[in-house]
Image (cartoon, rainbow, N blue to C red; front, side, top):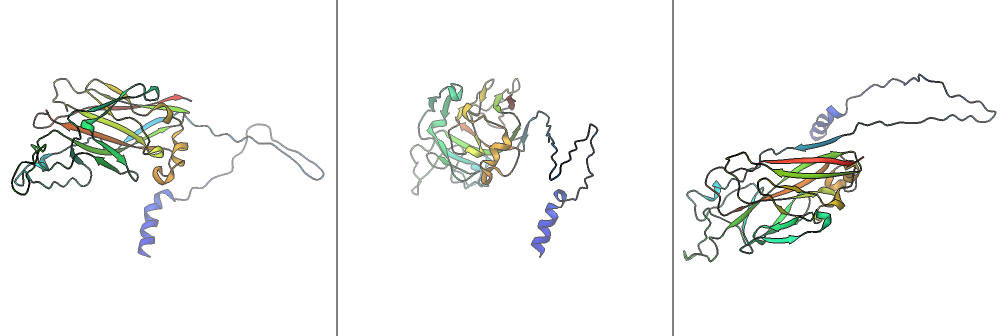
Length: 274
């Protein structure tokens, strides 16, 4: 009974009764008379304003690596709340792949060969060279000997949900980076967007340096309206007019200065066809 009461209270703001009065017309009435039947015609209209909207809950995304330091170094066991993973690279350099017209001919970049696999929405699994347990990076084996490669550069991943609304037939999502003049910027930043209804499909993972702009969603995934897209996969997207995107952000840690480094991003959703 208590669970039922709690659920009812949670839904109360949405369940308030709203009284509706009959609508009256200002124009000529429709009327008909027949011996056995009568027919009148009516047009039902729905008029909506043009609308394009974005909702971002996480306005500051922090990669805090101080948990890799401290008294337990170099065998730290940082607790990132399952919201951040840091892994060694699979290669010494980034892997670049030239994408086609659907991807605006942008160049996909896998940081040090690392990547991720879409599992069950909204979770991903990071594919890398093993977890990082210390900063500066280093590992020792049970005999206290240095583990080869453990001083290498590494990559950290985080994700968040970006919600978008468009009631047009097509839309596009862009991100740009413009760090303030003289700010200590993040050296290597990467980003990818995953619409919930097509979660797991290729959308392109890109490096985003300061001053650059990217198209985050390929052309073949820009169909709208977003409410139609959401209802195609309600188990992931919910029954919403908005479309949820899982945005993946990665930083490569190799030459960044100590302290706080930042990157300032701007997301722009444009409805391109009504």
